[in-house]
Length: 477
Image 1: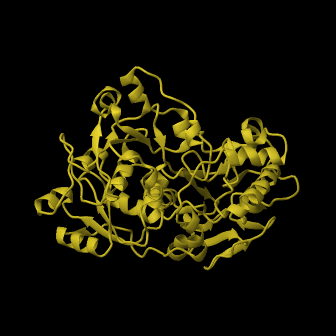
Image 2 (image 1 turned 45 degrees about the horizontal axis):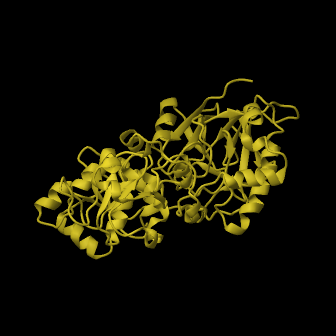
Image 3 (image 1 turned 90 degrees about the vertical axis):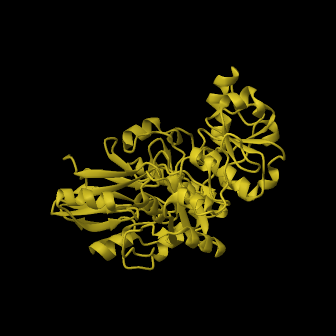
């Protein structure tokens, strides 16, 4: 079996892989592309390839698809499952149907589970005659490295039926030869997956031998194991699938952040714009616009923006001088934020210099403003008597937390504010980025006396000379 010219383009923040496959005739196939196509286009240009085909395994919930963008801008032919009819031009594929693509052949394989319409795609060199070896399989959100795609993104009623479908889909994939390369879309870091392996590709044989979901006995045990491994997911997952089915808007120009004056930002705030401050937590703690939402710019920025901000409201960005506005704009577009009002020109220096009110908490934390504290201050200083709110995912919390801490996940904090105890409060996560986001939500709700731990449970344990607690306390179950 010859080696295919396949280039994975990985988005570490979203935990997804897009694949560029050389078809051997000067053209290329792109599988599960995201809206930000810069890396895909650069890779194709570097190889002198035309982006001729854009393939989707399923309706993506975690990002805006790039297939329509490729169709409109590159003239690419879109290949997608016939189930879940899209409202833009594409070629619908059914189970078993083949498409000749240059020197290769693609064959659709129905693998519902992660979504009802899900297809995997077998790749053959030449025609798929009987007995021809499979050169590889694109499994999308079906079989992944060490796990399988979650089945609860459509509706509560379909979660178990889709899990049962996933069981049979994985068994169907296990009919392939052990040496068959497996190229999933979702991987570690994706909320579509419960897997933690850093590997992005695998083989049928490896998964047959090591995937925990393939070691359980029977369909019922599989369903229990799969659903038991799932944590929460961003609520924007429940709407992006429909956006992708209808066809996301084509970007006439690359997304950008227009410069805004202090006066313009104040006027936008009066018209229900939302302020998103992407600076590091320490900068946010030092000074920020009242009501701003803190979402630090890092690889997972797009996910948390989609989870915490509102796409229907105009978005105003506050960034540091060293932070790239292009990356911010593309990250927002990736999860469907097309209403970018712009950015405050000059950042917080312009806001403070313009005489506008700012929230600040330096060394003398002002009332109601989130300040950063050290692990030592939490372990044995003035903050040691404060209530501790850990806003990490439940699985992270169970793996190790400060004794006595309560757990409310960041994604649901705005809906569960009544559960947060009154009085002095320390918010924490694994470092401080998510915790500062939680503190900004609490501040907007009128909470005072909130501090953020600059660190995580291990830092507290080192400062306190005590181990963290594990598991979920009975009161929280």
